[in-house]
Length: 194
Length: 265
Image (cartoon, rainbow over all chains, first blue to last red; front, side, top):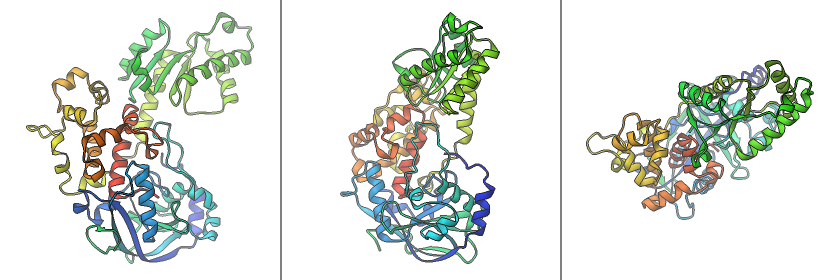
């Protein structure tokens, strides 16, 4: 996966799209194990790997807007990575999130404005690591340019591919405004969901 | 590994290719069992005399070249191939390229070269592009306290560096392959198991070994099995295949993401 090519048209579109506020809890599920005891919410901000909404290299925090969505993401990816989710312990982080400007791609009108279909959002995005890296997806380009300040968004709210009506929240570390806050409900993960 | 280039050429081109690849700090590989793992191929297209005749229509030559390309690509699925046509005069070579590209479209898995040195330059460029386009990986668990305690058993008792011998024992990987990944000789790594030069590769293995923190991978046999099992998270390749393909960093990053729940959605 590579950095998207300059796209003035998409950048202009993002600057014209209305933002929504997000005020509520968000969740991250993690597998149990020896790591859990020392892992704090602050460590989660280190993520820069490629995701559905961003190419690699973008500093972002990935959370789910519902507990059930976080659990569905956990179960899907645990299984994909060779962990049996049925016998794996599940821990979770919960945070109170307050963001003034979010790009809401769960909204059909917003999707239409940025010219992306729901099908494109939910499509498989992980490339074969042994093949030449494909260009970033449209959603990753949107995330990349949003993370660079186009539209002044601090996050993307995006439909979950793992749960119907589920939503994921991708918060860009470098885009948080003074009035924004992401406050963990507990320093360390708790067993199950709080 | 990313620096390996399998040579499929006849002499004198094969000898020239070996010398030039070595000069470019790339590793020439000659036919062997190892070539299954090599991701870069330098293939000389040996044109029959008929195809070299100046009166031969370009479209026919291009058609013949395409046939040779298809045969080669079918043997080297998902590899990067530079097709070298060293016997062809420059002007005809360019015309053949135009004809082939127009029928096949621009693709990223093969290129053409008129000389062996051009072909080697393509591999240098490719390696450089892959290195530069690779975003710097960050591992969330590196900043977590007590992480080193999870992998103390993989470190040399005196130097504190990760030991190649212990990685070989834990993952069951081949020392020769490990040495190649570290750009060292097998003997060199065997003599100096905690070599400083090998630490970048060995540190990636150490990060993968953090998977043992999960109850399902406590037993060494479970980790070995996981390392060899094709998994959807690696597009149905195994972690071992990614290692052999020079993508161990992808495995280490995925393990870090799995253990921190950073799935990417």
